[in-house]
Length: 359
Image (tube, rainbow, N blue to C red; front, top):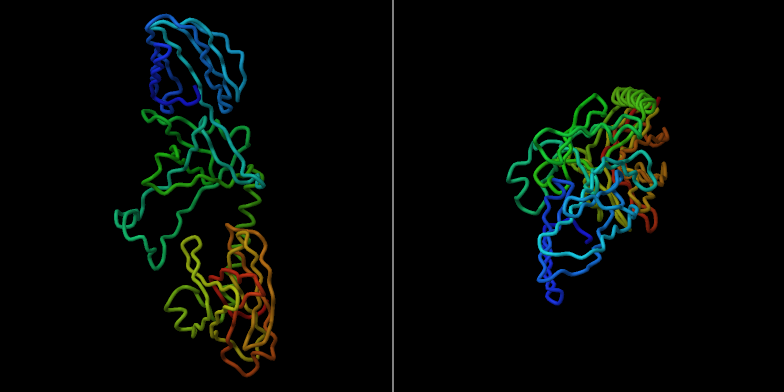
């Protein structure tokens, strides 16, 4: 017996029928009911799941049976079975964490074998959005903010508190901003926004993260104060206003934003405002590499000013700033900024370009 699924076995040669009665995973138990034309000896092997951290228990006709197996193996009940006999199985489900391979700061939460996801609501999920044409809209809806998990790793599973009256539904309280999130099984999350993966921090790490985020916001305010001109790539109005030119570029989507990228001999360019007589820089906002090699050159009015090879940061937006040689802006109020990939690589997925005064 491998799976806890309501089912029935009819074994004609043995004159035996075994019916499994269960509501797993809403209940962590199952029962085998035997019907035999005549008593028959049979070794029933019940899977002892590796996720059964609290052990398993078996009972024949209400009498407890010894459990000699270990997680990941089988428990055997070898006896003579007759009509009316029952084998009851209890497999208590515990909450546990699983860390992403290679990243101990991203975790998933499980209840027994069930992946639990955080319910992020249904805002904007109209029938037209959920069941409409397969073509994506011009601009996808922004992803809702996902709380981080802030706790000691050993204590986090205990933060899943059962929601009364709802099977396999929990409240998770150990999040940043002390926001309680409703957790539901992944297989029930077809009509909601949800997250299966969480950024995980200890309390000390979360304090450091908040300070770094505050510093990043301060840098962003400083960036805006120094900005002369901005292109919002992927936005038709902004691109048209900045004389968008292109050869074989595509339009990526990241976190609800549209951008531009090119590969092979492709490229894309924009005309941005400058300020004569002032030392300037170019700021580029792009997504980190998602595994594909992304190496590209940046040209201003046809002159190479920088090259970049992106690090692997598939879930992060990265900001780079490059000085523009004063000879390229002297006496000019505009320059053309061009992004082109190197060799067999692809360019960055670029979402914003800015000309700004140097720090």
